[in-house]
Amino acid sequence: MGQEYAKQVTQEMGAYPDSSVQRYVRTIGLRLAKASERPSLPWSFTVIDDPQVNAFALPGGPIFLTRGILTHMNSEAELASVVGHEIGHVTARHSVQQMTRQQLFQVGLVAGAIASDKVAQNLGLLSTGLGILSLKYGRDDETQADALGFRYALNDGYDVRQMVDMFRILQRISGGGSRIPEWQSTHPDPGNRIEATEARLRRVTVPLDGKKVGRPEFLAVIDGMIFGDNPRQGFFKDGRFNHPDLAFSIDFPSGWQTVNQVSAVAGLSPQKDAQLQLSLAGKGDPGQTLQQFLGQEGIQAGQARSTSVNGNPAAMAPFSAQTQEGQTLNGLVAMVSYGGNTYQLLGITAQPASAYSQAFQGFIMSFRRLTDPAALGIKPDRIDIVKVPRAMTLAQFNQQYPSTISIERLALVNGVADGNAPIAAGESVKRVINQ
Image 1 (cartoon, rainbow, N blue to C red):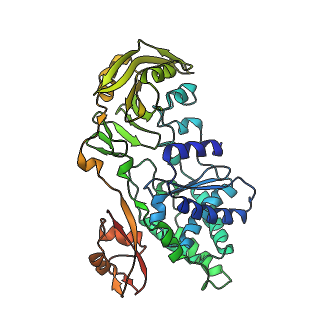
Image 2: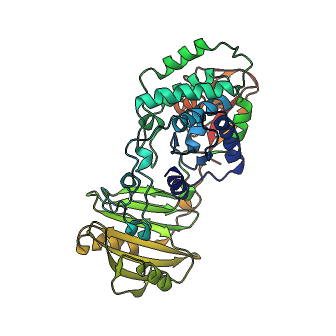
Image 3: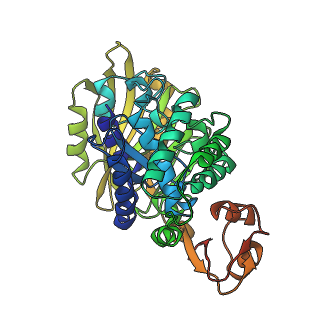
């Protein structure tokens, strides 16, 4: 089950497109895993291209870290502590609560209406976003994973004092409204996480001085990493979704919950009984692509017609589908040819077709070329590593080497308390730039 979910996570969330980062994390992860109680599992370690600060494990060995959590780390030892913790969840056979197919398809439409149905697969509806990644481990599981991760990192030669630093950073990060929840919401603090780690440190019988920290190596790997949301992959502004790299925009109705993932951008109605979705459907002729969609098992096609969407060749048709539970889903689908690609624009509801016909039609007809120069030229923030020439405070560093984020956030990503934190001459420090 874990391997199946892992494929969907990678397809829908997207791996961070930097082979050196992936190789670095994979090397550390495999080394830690091979020394665990279950070395023969098909372990995999992937950095997801997501700004949220989290890491998670799936049954059987797939482990994921977001680039967001990497940008908040400051050493290889901190990375090893988090990876070791996730390995601990797998080796201890912890199962996330209610990890079912219904949860996996939670964002697909509503309340499991298309949960285990082949119709969901045929329609290409999003699955992962608000499903398994929102599930929590129990506090007892967290305590055990902390202990196992501590042991794995220590046995591999890391300075496990860095584990306390990492947990302090994670405690300071509050949850946000993104497609992946923050660490604290999926890894509940058992109540004494830092105290328990400090107690383990007191029981260590080998000297920790001289153990590997790996700060320069780690910072060199994340130098240039995207920080926060990457607007090049699409961003919302007042209900309008703009995609600079693909040069299109499309409008979602006011009040709809939206999510942007690698495989699709989607919106869920306030009543949670209808979904809008845009995804790539290859490069074929719109009419032929539409017929392929309508010809799928479980879909009953209405009258198809050729049309134009803001000057772009298109084909459109209403359709309905029966779920295994006997419920009828009604929808409108259009295939639009633009920029060398064919896009699938889909609206579907568990209500009568007339309930959302205006919303579906408006969504499809709002697809257009993106012409706003500001939107087309937008760039993501990135981590920039600076080696300071002299001793200074973080506040002085921020004055000399400005960041696009607040001094409070800058302190957080550098793992220090505030702007008064001292920086030694020659030390490498993170800042966030946009250039």
